[in-house]
Length: 317
Image: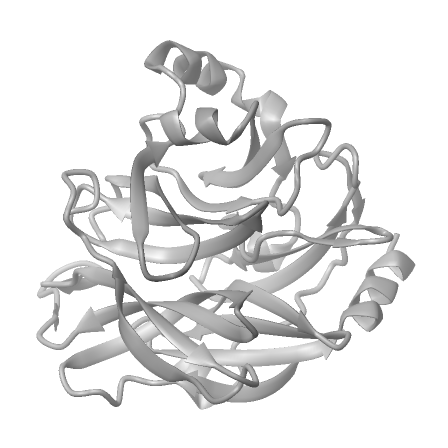
């Protein structure tokens, strides 16, 4: 099964913006909000090696009534703390009770350095006032974090990625999530990391690394997780799995093939070519709207019937 492309929903048309991509998504006050990653113009390709110089991300807000036509509003999460001074990237947002909890990649080292990525955590109730809570997780390169939209067995549950697989973390309550654990706890967690693996790399299209994409969506058949996989040629694709409702480390269904991969020019050509990177989703009248970054240049939308995707996954058991 493949997702149906709608096309681009946000591009770098505003003066001063060089790229806008990798957007979290949520519903608030009857509208759909995107939280895209924005790079201002002025970055240049490195003379040697991979990536760009002068490349510092901010997370902005965009708003839509229908989930397709968006207005870019304003900066929302800025790199203004020691732990994210080199960039705020790739936000995922989950509503839990009356708060919107947002995890993002906080860079304390320059982008493309291969180090310094941590899980930044902010919260908001109205998308005007935002509160930073620092970083969560162990003191190692750690990205692609998402929060489940309800407690499981009384715990707040978070998926994240210490390369190259997807792991799980549990917190007693929102206060513990905001305050984080001490260093002793995380050193023990790292020693036992294999016990917390949810998904390992399995297929050729995800042979280099995988990472959680959208926050899990609850269905009758299990938690729907759309994730990304990267192969040895650095091509990013999107896959989908079902996780057990009560024991999310148990994988119920996992197809062999991706549900979205770079095929269009705007997915194959950009600042980082051959990338589809899902990060946010909403469900509107049974239709799943999946928002993804294309080639690190723009935000795009792909859709399918939520029940159709779940049925497909169930058949793949």
